[in-house]
Length: 155
Image: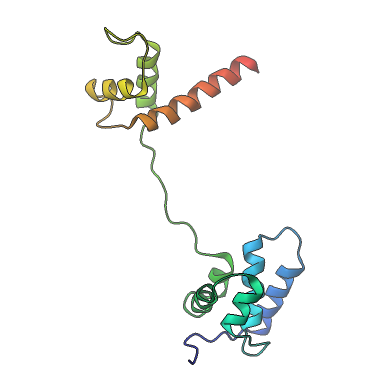
């Protein structure tokens, strides 16, 4: 089956790939991509996808995806990888965190000996500190604030 995406590297691109291979401390994924691109080059060794996959311990689909990425997205993007686009927003702002910490440091409701994370989450919603919050979010937030306080006492 004829290849849909043909890898034709310029001299400059080949030099860049060879420089990556010579450097120390380069990410393994970049090195592997560089090696695969050099072997897939039509003007170079022109290995088949199956041969490249076998040589570098990956699937042929990986090599095909690399070829496609080079043709459609460009040399730099293929070599570096796509930038991560997932950015998480902060669930609680500083004021909400402060109110929850104050709530946590106070006495638990009648009938409870200690605060539980689920109880704290329920109270935060009841007192309209937040619209909704999971107990896991509170656990992470309290863990961070507790460790900061403990470090300041030690240091």
